[in-house]
Length: 96
Figure 1 (tube, helix red, strand yellow):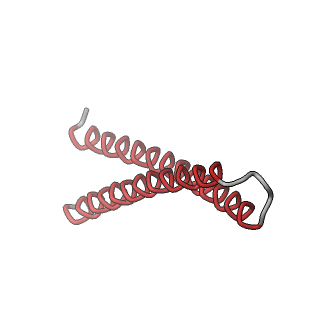
Figure 2 (figure 1 turned 45 degrees about the horizontal axis):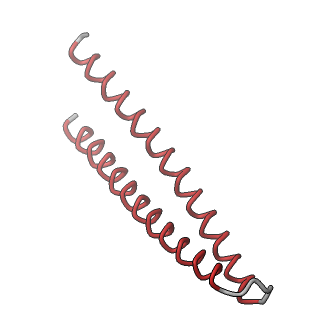
């Protein structure tokens, strides 16, 4: 029983660590996206291969940020479910 409990705690810690990594990635992507936007604005508005590449990079970074945001939401929902399960287990054990 104690071993299973420790495994659950370890899994929660792993989820928390992964969430922090995703948050850091999201922030870094946001900074990168801002820098690329500044570069795109400072360049002449003519359509050149480099401008098109820059726009493609910006769209890919934006898509990555959206995906990371969705993953963060899923992780939060999983954390909520895990907390609910822990609460139910506690109530069951204590006879509440």
